[in-house]
Amino acid sequence: MAKIVQKFGGTSVANPECIRKAARIVVSEANAGNEVLAVVSAMGHTTDKLISLAQQITPSPTARELDMLLTTGEQQSVALMSMAIQELGGQARSFTGGQAGIITESKHGSARIEEIRPAPLESAMNRGEIPVVAGFQGITTNHELTTLGRGGSDTTAVAVATAIGADRCDIYTDVNGVYTSDPRIVSRASRLSSISYEEMYEMAHTGATVINDRAVSLAKEHQLPVRIRSTFWPEDKGTLVTELSNTPEHSICGITLDLNQVWFSWQMSVNNDQNSKLDNVASLFLRLNELNITADMVMLLAREDEPLQELVFTVEKSAAKRTQSIIESQNSQGSKLLLDDKLARISVISRRLNGKPEIVATVFDALHQADIPVHMVATGDLRFSLLTPKNHAENALNLIHQHFNLSDPNRN
Image (cartoon, rainbow, N blue to C red; front, side):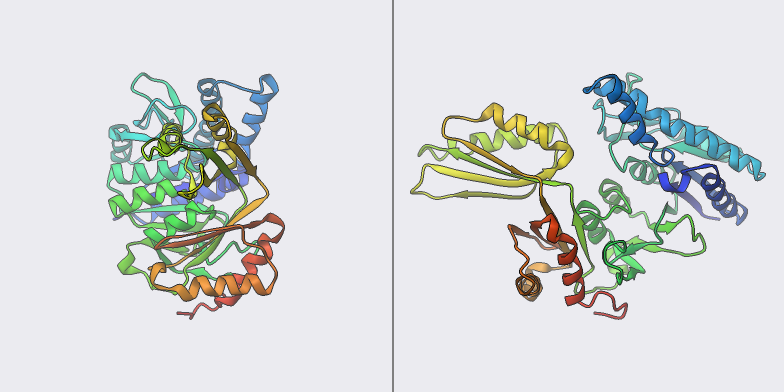
């Protein structure tokens, strides 16, 4: 008998029929002799509707009250899912994040889980009940409700799975696994049977939406196998996310597209004091870290013979205004700030990229032949990213995918 956590995203519980379908998957797993715990997101676009509702009251709702509002979305889902399981003859009990013992830091809107106290969940399972836990939310030690940010239900599922000692976590969504690229854009994208934690993290971090990157990082830390599966084809095993040694090594694992990045260029006047040249840069990144804002593709450009240095990076569009405000508060005479939200980030994911210069060369050659401009590049051991105008993004994605023959499931 295995202990399995099953997470169902918004599309999987979008309406009563979807909820009944998800409930049948849960009950089927339990009838197979396994212990099952379900984690559910809010129904469909409920979270977006609640945010819109708040903005009809005030354009700038406080983070605390917004969390109070948003957590109601998952409360609907857990109650309805529990009813559906009971209607199928199963025993189920719904839990909010707080009732499930999910303790978070005191940061509204993007809280991180600090610990899980699983006693209530374990007691329910010992009684033969299926716990149905609200994803995306938790509670502080001061009993304040918090939310975990976009994709937080994935993190809830993995965190709960590790807390109860689950054998596996299944992430049910509207696609039947992880593909070499977004199949809605690249029609010939092929599905991966398995992928390493490291590669999945990079794909999730750079645009793949099948799982949250924080959830992948947590799964890797605890060596928890994760399956990405489809609610609508439950018999399909999907893609297994597991240890590097258990997955095949392809020259290219996948290519991602992110249309939600904003490019920043901050040109600063500096003096000859080497220590003071990084004062503004250090201050900026310390503040971004405090706000849980991740900067990507970071470059600092400077010349010894010029009194200027330029800091270039990208952040998610949702963080752009806050980032701009921080920089403007530090701007000095002679400084200049440029932003561009019309660029797309394309990332090529592979192992040991630093030893594969031919991959970077192939990407540049393909884009050059198609007259697709490249504005900026950044490379690492697992990822090569570039920025290109959004109006060229889909064409670029298909071209790169085609050049590496990623449609062939037998590729090396």
